[in-house]
Length: 118
Image (tube, rainbow, N blue to C red; front, top):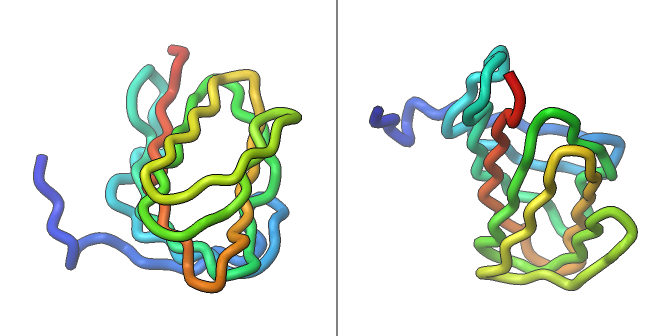
């Protein structure tokens, strides 16, 4: 499969998962109705300075964030860590996470979410 950048949908999400502020989402791949195991979506997201993705739980799927640009704080269950370019954060099914941009520039992340169950 090959998807051209020009064909990827760009949209703004406000207060994502109960967070605050703007997140710009470039949908690289979206298969949200997927029932079986495999990738549900791939996003190239940009989180505005001071904005956040609110805490949410994953059940039946797993998600990873790969930090491309910017700095922030990632909370995985009850542990908060500082993150920056090249850091990888993985949330397994049954766990929760959130992310906040603590920098002065947009934070770019690659997000991949995959179903774990049939």
